[in-house]
Image (cartoon, rainbow, N blue to C red; front, side, top):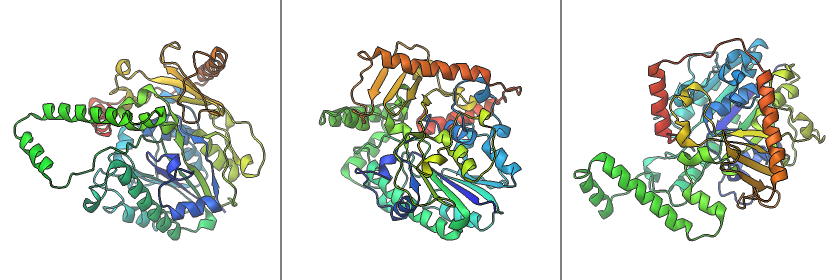
Length: 448
C-alpha cells in the first residue's frame, strides 16, 4: 500500500510559537501531534523567500545561484518522482507564490486562492472539500498565508495588535488542522507540518484597523489635505520613531531586533528569527518519540519521506540528507546548512535591486551561525556562538578568524559542488507582464 502524504506549510510561522518555554499560543491539536509524532526542535530553512524555499524543499537542494537552480524544472522535483510512482499531486496555495516563481505541477487546475480568501472567508471549506475529491494515493500540499503580515482577522478582532492577531490565527489554524485530520485516515497518511520561514512579530505593531476615535477622525481630515505619498512618508517615520523608542526600553539585542526589524531588512541578515522553523512528522510509520534537537534542514524533508516510505531516489541529485535514522534512535552527523538571502528565481531577481538590498550568504552548524555580504567576504561579517549565545546577540567574528575560515571553506565547497551540477535545459524566459505581476506581489508583501 502506498500511503497518502499531507504537507502543511504555515507561512511565516515561528518555531517558538509551537514548541518551547516561550510558547504563548493554544494549539491542542498540534500539541497532541507532537506528543504522538516526532518534532524536530532545531529545524532550519535556507532562505526568506517563499517560492525559493519551496523549490529547496521539493528539490532537496540548496539554492546556490548556480545553473541547476536557475534552470530548475518540474522534472527535477521529488513531486515528479511521486508522479512516476503513481501519486496524484494536489495543492491549495496563494496565487502570489506561483507569481514569485514556484514551478511545480499538479494533477488538477484547482491550485490557488486569492488575497481575499483566508481561513475565515471560505478557504477552510475549500481545503476540506478537496480532500473528499482527490484520488489515492495522493500528495496534498496546503500552504496557508494567515500568519503572513498583516495577519488578517475578522472585523470583530481588528482591534488586536500584530502579536495578538498572529497568536489568534495560529489558534484558528490549529482548529483547521483538527478538522483535516478528521477527514483523512491517519493510519494511511504521512503528515508533515512546517513553515517556509519565521517572522519578526513586533508587540507594538498597530491594530489591523483602528476603532473609531478622535485620532481616527483627525487622520481622516488629513487625508483630504495631504497627498498620499506625503501621508505614507509621515506614517513610515512615525513607525520608525515608535520602534526606536520601544527598543530603548530593553538592553537585549534580540528583543531590540523584534521591535526594530521588519521584512524589508531581511536581505541583510540571517538570524534564527527567520531561519528557525517548526518541523513535525506524524501518522503513517511514525511512532511517538521525544522531540529531536539535532540540527536538520528543510532540504532533508523529501529525502526522509522517500526513505521512510522505501521509495528509491538518486542521492546524487540533491543536497538533503534523510534523517530517518534519527527516528530509530540512531546517531547521524548533522550537515552544515547553506543560507542565503539572495533572490535567485527570475521573478524575484527582476524586481529586487541587489545593489540596495545587500544580500548575504552564510552557514549554520550546530555550534555556529555565520553570514556575510554575498559578494564580499569582508563586509557585514557576523559570527555567533549558538551554544552559548542562542539568541545571536554577540557578534564574535573579529576574535574568531579560524572559525570564519572554516565557515568559508564550507561556502567554497558548496560553490565547487554547484559547478559540477549541470543541466542542459536553458532557463525559462518571463515576459514583461509576468515581471509586473511579480513586482506588484513583492511590493504588497513588503519585499521591495
